[in-house]
Length: 96
Image 1 (cartoon, rainbow, N blue to C red):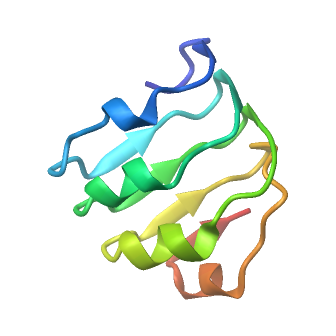
Image 2: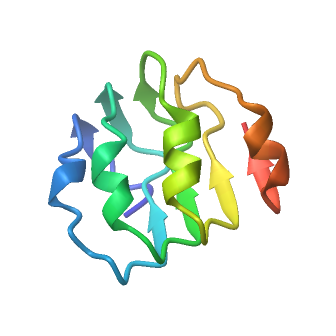
Protein backbone atom coordinates (compact mmCIF):
# COMPACT_ATOMS: atom_id res chain seq x y z
CA UNK A 1 0.00 0.00 0.00
CA UNK A 2 3.04 2.21 -0.37
CA UNK A 3 3.23 5.09 -2.86
CA UNK A 4 -0.53 5.50 -3.04
CA UNK A 5 -0.83 9.07 -1.78
CA UNK A 6 -3.06 7.94 1.08
CA UNK A 7 -3.51 10.84 3.44
CA UNK A 8 -4.81 11.58 6.90
CA UNK A 9 -4.85 9.28 9.87
CA UNK A 10 -4.60 5.54 9.34
CA UNK A 11 -7.23 3.42 11.10
CA UNK A 12 -4.64 0.94 12.36
CA UNK A 13 -7.27 -0.63 14.59
CA UNK A 14 -8.87 -2.06 11.45
CA UNK A 15 -5.80 -4.22 10.75
CA UNK A 16 -7.20 -7.30 12.50
CA UNK A 17 -5.00 -9.52 10.34
CA UNK A 18 -2.88 -11.73 12.61
CA UNK A 19 -1.43 -13.62 9.60
CA UNK A 20 -0.08 -10.44 7.96
CA UNK A 21 3.69 -10.68 7.42
CA UNK A 22 4.49 -7.38 5.64
CA UNK A 23 2.97 -3.96 6.16
CA UNK A 24 4.27 -1.39 3.68
CA UNK A 25 2.76 2.08 4.07
CA UNK A 26 5.74 4.18 3.00
CA UNK A 27 5.67 7.24 0.74
CA UNK A 28 2.12 8.28 1.49
CA UNK A 29 0.82 11.36 3.24
CA UNK A 30 -0.19 9.68 6.47
CA UNK A 31 -0.23 11.91 9.53
CA UNK A 32 -1.13 12.12 13.19
CA UNK A 33 -0.31 9.98 16.18
CA UNK A 34 -0.18 6.19 16.09
CA UNK A 35 -1.59 3.95 18.78
CA UNK A 36 0.67 0.93 19.29
CA UNK A 37 -2.11 -1.31 20.61
CA UNK A 38 -3.52 -2.42 17.20
CA UNK A 39 -0.05 -3.63 16.19
CA UNK A 40 -0.15 -6.20 18.99
CA UNK A 41 -2.55 -8.25 16.84
CA UNK A 42 0.03 -8.51 14.05
CA UNK A 43 1.91 -11.36 15.70
CA UNK A 44 3.38 -12.71 12.44
CA UNK A 45 4.59 -9.36 11.10
CA UNK A 46 8.19 -9.56 9.86
CA UNK A 47 8.50 -6.26 7.94
CA UNK A 48 7.03 -2.87 8.87
CA UNK A 49 7.68 0.20 6.73
CA UNK A 50 6.11 3.52 7.73
CA UNK A 51 8.82 5.68 6.17
CA UNK A 52 8.32 8.94 4.29
CA UNK A 53 5.09 10.03 5.93
CA UNK A 54 4.11 12.88 8.24
CA UNK A 55 3.42 11.19 11.55
CA UNK A 56 4.13 13.24 14.63
CA UNK A 57 4.91 12.83 18.28
CA UNK A 58 6.52 10.09 20.25
CA UNK A 59 5.90 6.42 19.86
CA UNK A 60 6.07 3.62 22.39
CA UNK A 61 8.78 1.78 20.52
CA UNK A 62 9.57 -0.54 23.43
CA UNK A 63 5.93 -1.63 23.52
CA UNK A 64 5.87 -2.17 19.77
CA UNK A 65 9.07 -4.19 19.67
CA UNK A 66 8.09 -6.36 22.61
CA UNK A 67 4.85 -7.37 20.91
CA UNK A 68 6.25 -7.87 17.39
CA UNK A 69 8.56 -10.74 18.22
CA UNK A 70 8.92 -11.88 14.58
CA UNK A 71 9.87 -8.42 13.28
CA UNK A 72 13.00 -8.56 11.12
CA UNK A 73 13.00 -5.07 9.61
CA UNK A 74 11.56 -1.75 10.69
CA UNK A 75 11.78 1.38 8.56
CA UNK A 76 10.73 4.63 10.24
CA UNK A 77 13.03 6.92 8.25
CA UNK A 78 11.55 10.29 7.33
CA UNK A 79 8.35 9.27 9.09
CA UNK A 80 8.14 12.28 11.40
CA UNK A 81 8.60 10.25 14.59
CA UNK A 82 10.99 11.61 17.17
CA UNK A 83 11.90 8.20 18.51
CA UNK A 84 15.06 6.15 18.70
CA UNK A 85 15.60 3.22 20.98
CA UNK A 86 18.53 0.88 21.59
CA UNK A 87 16.16 -2.06 21.00
CA UNK A 88 16.24 -1.22 17.28
CA UNK A 89 19.87 -2.29 17.11
CA UNK A 90 18.82 -5.92 17.52
CA UNK A 91 16.81 -5.87 14.29
CA UNK A 92 18.32 -7.12 11.06
CA UNK A 93 17.78 -3.88 9.12
CA UNK A 94 16.81 -0.97 11.39
CA UNK A 95 16.33 2.18 9.29
CA UNK A 96 15.57 5.17 11.46
